[in-house]
Length: 535
Image (cartoon, rainbow, N blue to C red; front, side):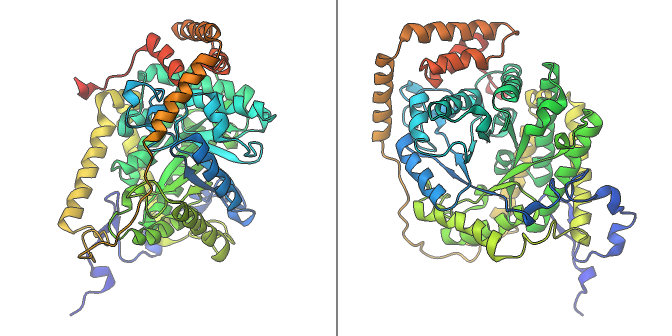
């Protein structure tokens, strides 16, 4: 006798929550839509942060680009803008992310490989040459040296005649997740938090339309975090940033409206939609009840989404186009404010021009050829989505409480809690893939005996030589006495507490100090962070 739907074994979500075969009205017994959902654009923002969402205009379509030299990346940006991209997402190479110049011995072999090398205001000028900085929104994936790159961007805009108040965009600026999942930190956590609160204060006065931080769960998800862990650990970090800003004397409603978030979108569409809705509800309650925010904009969880790079396969890479389409759709149905769709070949190398254009076209098809932009929050009232949203929310609160019990996000990082939890999840996922319990098409099922040949985009090693030569010319052609004086003033400011560090930092960069020299000046005072497990 065949099993009925309700007799089938209960499935499990990515967060190891039960996913029933059938949901009905009983699944939402006691559910009050007035308080748990509200209206779109109203507290608790479950249904989206804006009343009209995409019915007025679609999300910002970003493409993550940047490789090799600033000039090559500039050419790619012009192509993306001409193809209809409204926002650029800049990838920086590893030395730039770590605060090292291209001619540093520690940068050898890494220059221009995973992003563009930016050593100075000169490089930043080349990177954005001819682009309308008063019209495009620029997102920069940079963390520990976020202040340095933001100031370079502001200085370049000024050279182009664009006022700081016209600039829009985001710096990731989320260093806490670096200690948890990614590793591109420089300074100890306390000093890193000081830099972040200084950025909040600086932008509030100087660059008011800029999103001063993009608090990221994406990288934790890529390291193996479940959807619940992704949201909980991200919001725990966000609480630490808000508290640091309050401790620095800032008013919550002065900076909180400029906070933004960055999440992943997986192929598990239903859980991802529920995850985004739960995240909005939890954050709204945190800001209202824990931090006393009065401005509704302070309670809005606005977020950028990137499709899941970790779910892309080098095997049968064309299948990634289907994965990315589903992931992008999940982000849109979940109410994202901007979206980057990965290129199908990114599991192999940096994306080719054709692959990057196809990734953008994926978003455009979702926006203009489907009907998902014609109504707000299409899944509202769905038995399964509302039930799963509630369950994810409850699990997120439980995990947030565990972090609070340890003393907060920074204390948890110092004790290795978040990192250990994510590593456990990643190990469990890998065991499922290895055993075949978790199907990955083309990898452990529906495989080919022989893969088709693919020519990936490769970075020319000459880039490092050329970048070092540019630095040599820069240092010979600038007023080095003025640079040294500005860097000394930055060190003095870092030793005290009264000065916003972005002010002397801007003076140094305007004098053509390099990013590495600015970072080294702070290293001289603060030292470098050494993780607990490194001993």
